Image (cartoon, rainbow, N blue to C red):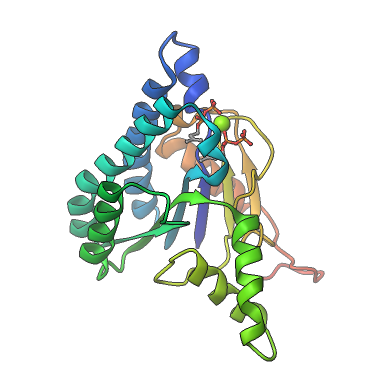
Length: 230
Ligand code: IPE
Ligand code: IPE
Ligand code: MG
């Protein structure tokens, strides 16, 4: 089972408390740690977490700095815990615009956690699905007859994804917005969508379970007349 989450609502969580937006991101990072542990307990095989979109570079530099600092801290602090729990970390997205310190923390996390087999944790950073599709399409003329699986491989290649993941089964978006915001447009083709008003810092194991229960009650037909598994 592949669950992807658009972790939205950190800024509003902070604003409602009269705090700077960066305080929401700090709280959101704590939620990431809790949800990673909860997802592993729930037996989820692949967890993809959207942390920063290519469009998020349009935010004020101070907010971007705070986020980049948090990302680096996350990789440094969480890698040993992930290794301990056999969780493999992969980072999806562009890498050429990330700072050197963050980049080396990412490479270290990926290397140290590469043997993890309990859960595949994919952190999405500096990512645009449309840009990825355009880049993959530009590489596609190398392949004579292109099957969807080949295109998946090309998408993995442009996003530096070391280990391919199955298509997304369940996409959760917190924060109340009902849109995809240029996230995994190809990969969610047949995903079940779960939108919740809960702001990301308030998301927890119980809310993850609610989303999983919602998913379990869906009938996936993939165009046929009876339920299918994929
Ligand atoms: C999601 O929360 C985190 C990132 C996009 C990095 P937001 O920062 O978008 O929070 P809201 O949507 O403004 O509340
Ligand atoms: C999507 O949230 C990106 C992440 C959660 C990392 P945004 O807050 O950037 O999306 P929009 O601007 O509301 O579409
Ligand atoms: Mg937002």
